[in-house]
Length: 492
Image 1 (cartoon, rainbow, N blue to C red):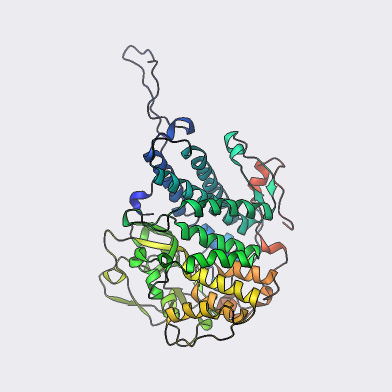
Image 2 (image 1 turned 90 degrees about the vertical axis):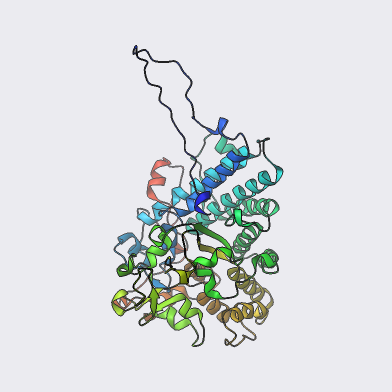
């Protein structure tokens, strides 16, 4: 959402002071809000929904901690000096790991705020039907999104029902992965029915019907419900409101606020230094942290004439305008241990980037291209090689007319296309794990290839243990707080 939409619902407490005669005044407090008296009108509903969007910018949630769960992949090296990140990359983490712990509470805060809105916005009468319906749809989507991230990361997790919320019963046991998937599916179907297909500029950045259908497609793919994935995904890829951007790199510049391809994003009017997504990827010498440095294996994956490589990676000798008034700055070998950095997130407030005081940078969380390739995968896995050619070729043609079309593509070609199209967007590790479960790839062998490791780590061995590493452990502090209600995931 744009900055003007990003705000927390502040609970103000007015303290009544004693009178001049030192006698306490017996007055009602003013400006004290709770669930019973807050939801009065349309403005309250919109502000409550805005409070859910605001969570996306949290450094300990989507903005950084959540993306750490992809560093185990063969696409990039963690870099940085965080021991918790090193443990996740090396698959040596345990239930006390800080990154495992950080975003648990924010996922449930997403569920909590969404459920609050679902229960209470339905009761508001002083609101237009359109805003009420949209707001309810947004709340259903975000509750599904919170459970989606919980399920993908931890597997079996507690489901907090509306009744649990009303009775403040938050200490409940885990539900099965199947039950969590059904909860996500039910909420997304509600969101699909309630959300508009698109928005005017004033509401740019809100989740749409296409956002909900895109996440539903992803859910069905992880569930291996391929016909359902195709049906949901087709509603995205055949709708002109969610068309692919004309140029691949248009999704990663400040001008991308107008991109129809971006189904879900974090948007804010801000300088690069305020954006955790960009600052974590930018080299330290350029004002960032230099984390998540791309590996040689990812660089090698791009075909020789694929412009997505230059749009995705900064290589030695490349030049960037850092917006410092010094013109172009050269990317040199000393800026990265691996020889690469992510260009797609190196966004500076420059005219060339489409920058300016009123321009938004939308950090993509889900793009239509992802859905094109998921539908292509579902077609291949149900109908055989070649069934996904048309969709794969649409993605390739958008990248460059010089890329040769695929013909008779099977999973090898599909896996390649997802890797180069979505590099650095948090999909690779989860993709490899679901393909490993289906015995399509050998994730343990992939992670031990020399090009899957940073140069200084080439001699280490990565021990991927099945089924232990398919999910992360429940944070130990949550187990402790539950007093035995929560049970740890197997093998931790």
